[in-house]
Length: 179
Image (cartoon, rainbow, N blue to C red; front, side, top):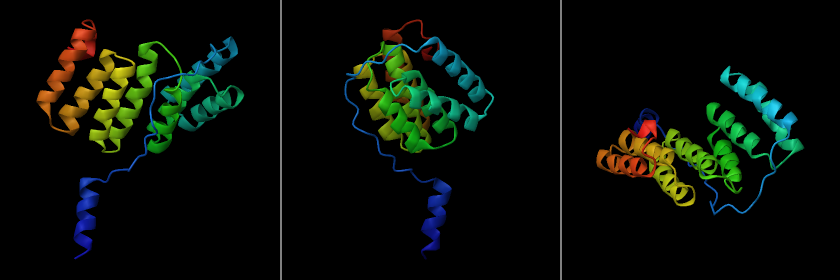
C-alpha cells in the first residue's frame, strides 16, 4: 500500500522545498570590478558556456573569496549552481546578490534566477511570487516574461500569462521575448 504513493511521487516529481530568504529592497553598494576581475569573470563565463561547471565554479568562487562584494561573481556562481541543479545554493547566492543596489535590469536578473530556480524545482507558485516581488523592486519586462512562462507552462494559467505579457509589453514595448 505504501509503495503506490511513493511511485506516484516519483512519477509526478517532488518539490525541493526550497527556502527563499527574505528579499528586501537593496541597501548595499558593490564596488566596480577591477580589470583583473573582469578578465577572470570573462574566463569563468567562457568555461560556463563550455559546460565546464567545476572549472567555472572555481573561477567565480576565487573571485568572491578575494572580493565578497563582487556581484557579478555572485550572479555567475548562482548560474553555475542552477546548471548543476544545486537549487538551494542557486537561490541563496542570487538572494545575496539582490541585496546590492543596481540598475533595474541588473537587479532583476537575481529575482529572475530565483524565480526560474523555483520553477525548475517544481515550485511554480513560489516562483510567481518572487517574480512579482522582483517587479516591485526592479520593474523590467524580462520578469513579466519569466512570470508568464511559469504561469502558462507550469501552472497552466494562460489568462494570467497573457496579463503578465501585456504588462511587460506596456513597460518595455521593444522587449522581443514579450511579443
